[in-house]
Structure formats: structure tokens, C-alpha cells
Image (cartoon, rainbow, N blue to C red; front, side, top):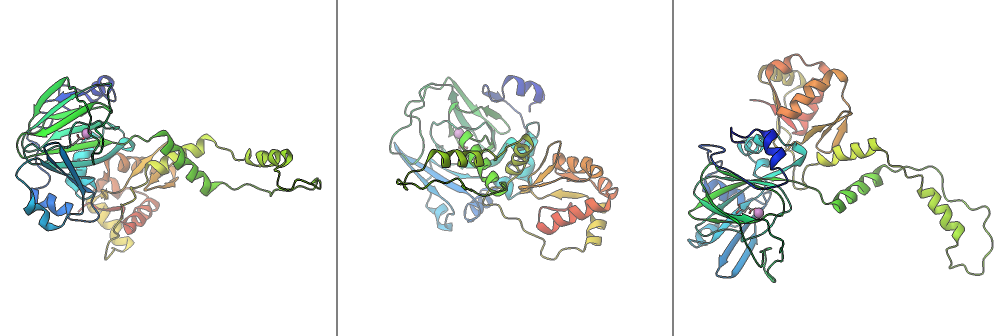
Length: 371
Ligand code: SIN
Ligand code: CO
């Protein structure tokens, strides 16, 4: 946040409500990747990337991973490479994303970077998510505004607004941030070769949420008894599902109970679930438990960039799994969850059971010694 606006004031006035241009929000903001480093990420099959190019009214969109020859063949103008989830691959990228920690981690989605040649962009569009667009190197012209008409152009590989009537027009320079709530029409066009970092926020669709909850329930439902019909009568219409059978089935199903604790437990596990393409890498040559405890007390511990650690009043949720730690461990775990790290001094006073928990996480690749 720019110094002149507190997080509280930003949230009250702008979050999920209206756009805000913040000039010089991160003065001197330093590039996270060089162009060769970014290209290399886009060549990896565990990184989501897209290349969007435009020739007149013709748009093309290609998904990565890209062969190395791609970069030699790029024209001088009107293309942009977008690399998603860079926070999962680089600690500085994760740190940049966590600068927005005045908003809940459960709402954070990922950090995307786009690298565009002059004239490059993805066309006028709307997103369903809140986003902070942070300008890195170069200049990008952003035009944006609220509009009712959200119809897309037909037969294009991208969702591009058929009509775009922006009410704002600004050129962003290094360190400027444009915040956009969902459904604001926007178009960012590179004036020079430029990079833009998008800190995106997730918001579940109601159907997606309900489907995820039903999956959760399926794994946990455990009802006693079995259908029984000692009062069955002989029938001449055996194909008919008779009302007594329907009533019995209905009463069996009414035993499926949903209570608030289940919903909260579901929410914690679901919100902390890593994305499907996330894999943790356990240490190749793990320290012994004793060596780990000594190293943690000397250097502190840090969560892996891929780890999601959240909590509520009842439990902690790490990468999709709930755990109810001892009361004595809660304050340290809450610090670890909020700061994403614990200092050496904090680790050195932890009870043995918490060190054992951390050691298990270390062995799973969820956490490491802060070397
Ligand atoms: C970009 O960085 O080029 C696109 C970001 C966006 O408009 O959502
Ligand atoms: Co957008």
C-alpha cells in the first residue's frame, strides 16, 4: 500500500468495490526475473504459461510449455508471454505476493507475470477476481472502467469485449499499482517492452463450493442401518417405485446431517488444499530429528512457498489436512501461519511435540530450516 493510504482505508473504500490507481506504491520495485529466466520458466511443463499474439484483428493464444525455439521466432511487436503461479517457484515472488498480507491468505490466489513487447496485451476483458496490477520494467497503458455491456467478440481464442468504453486512461511506470475489483473492463497495452505482475485473488463460485463440499461429505458420510421392508406387499406392478419405498429412502437420507463444525472443517481443508499441479519435494538427504531440532533452534524455520497453512478457532489446516494441536503449540503455529516463518529464538522454546510436528512437515517438504 502507498504510505498515504492505510490497509484499513483501502479495504473500506476500494476492496471489491472500485478501482484505485496507486502511483509509486512500491518505489524502485525490482524485477523478479530477467527475460531469459522467465522464458526458462515458460519452457517447464510444471509451470502454466500462455503466449498471446495479435496481428490486426487476429488473435492467437498458445499454451506452454514452449520449446526453446519459440523465442527466436517472436516478432518485434504485439505479443505477450504470461506465466502463472510464479510464487510457487521463487521465494522472492512469494515474498512479493505476501506483501498483500493485509488481505487473508485464503483469498490470495497467485502471482502472475506478463512480459510484453511493444503493443502487446491480452485485449479488453473482464476478470471475475480482484487483482493488483504492479508495473515492473517499462510502461504499460491501462484503460479501464465499469460498463454494463460485457458481451465478448465471437470466435476468438480469448474472451475479448466486443465493445470497450473505458472511462480511465493511465500510463503505469515502475512501482505503480492499479487495483481492479472483479468485473471492471480493462485493457493493458505495453508502450515499451514491459513486465506486469498480477497479484490475483481467488473467489469460489457457489457451484464449485457446493461440489467441493459434496465431495468432502461423500468421504465422511457413515450412516447406520440398511434398507429393510418386512412389511412388503406382493405386487402386480413390479416396475413401480411405490411411495412407501420412497418415504423410506427419504427418511434414510434425512439422517445425513451437516453441522457447522463440519462446514468449518471442510472450509479449512478446502481452502488450504494446494492446486492440483503442486507437488512437494521432500529433502533428498533429510537431517535426523535431533539435527533438525538443533538447526531450527539456530536458524529458525520457514514454510515452503507451496505450503498453505491456515487456521481457525478449532484447528490448523496444512495443505488440505486438519490438525488440532495441543493448546501450548497454538501461538507458535499461528505465528508460523501468519509470518510464514519462525525465528530461531521462537523455535528454541518450542515443546518437543511441536518440533516433532515440524520435523514431519520437514520430511514432507512442507517446511524447511531457514538457511
Ligand atoms: C497482463 O498482465 O497483460 C494481463 C493482466 C490482466 O489484464 O488481467
Ligand atoms: Co485482466
